[in-house]
Image (tube, rainbow, N blue to C red; front, side, top):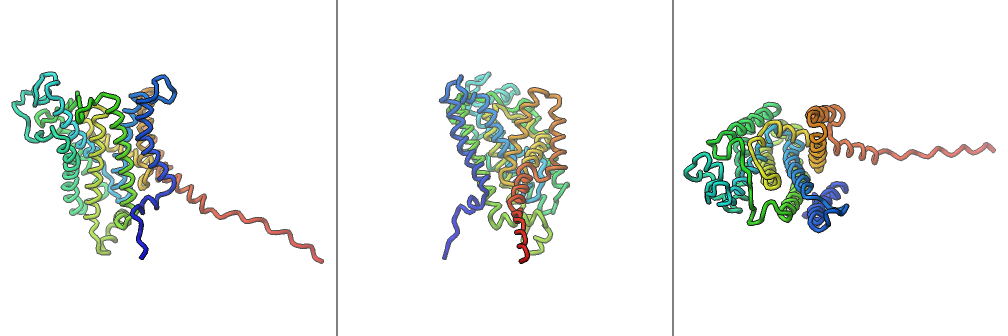
Length: 383
């Protein structure tokens, strides 16, 4: 009996998608090399600030891919995905704060500086264990995953969907914003967590560490793209699309759509948390502003502009929008929000499938266009 190959998703991907994933993997090696081995005055040199900026964009791309999994393929429009991203960032920030030790402003070997300033007498119980990297890595998965599982179990079993679910997700991230702003929560209040020194014993400001973080971000993005391809190409992926397009019909066929949505929702939250954990050491700070509902809405814009329901569309959208944001906020900062709003309106009206979706649609239409028939031969003259 002929067996199916394991890498079915890669075989089923289009050539362009496979090339795109290859570019990401090559960039994971090439960008750090051009940053560390090429002379600063050489045309091929990539400066340190660009490595950090591109690393941040990679994390945003991972976040967009996680949202695309639930919105593009399962029809769950989340307006609170930034909460899972921020929670992953706070978990990483707690680990990095525990690595400072006596090098802080107050020189306390156990308590972070903000706790000394706020007269904490001992380390809160939920900070215990964060001096270990393995514990932090486990919490990056468990914290956003647990919140997503509990939220999803309550929402999906009650059959909350559509705009009502979107509003509830936005309320969730706003509630977390208000909670983390409080000084007595033990997370640094309005200032958040910053002044990081080391990660795994390596200087977090060194060129080598930043290059390594960039490479890890690129590899995790490639992994997330592969996971999306693997899931959507499987039978479970077909069930995702069926749930998106006709949840009641799927239920009548004997499936449990709430379980399908709960699984993919939790997985998406874990992916967002990992993206947040990689984001924090590259930007050097995490504060409650990451929970802002506007941030979650921006994620929706990245995904829509790039093309929801496509593999690489969210990555294109994240780089395109954030690249434009970096340029406009430097040139015309007061006009950026107007440009962002106009871009979203234009995408909704004229590019409902996003950049990648529209391009793919026209490409397949062109490929399927029948070849023009040659003109009939001139009739032979009557004898």
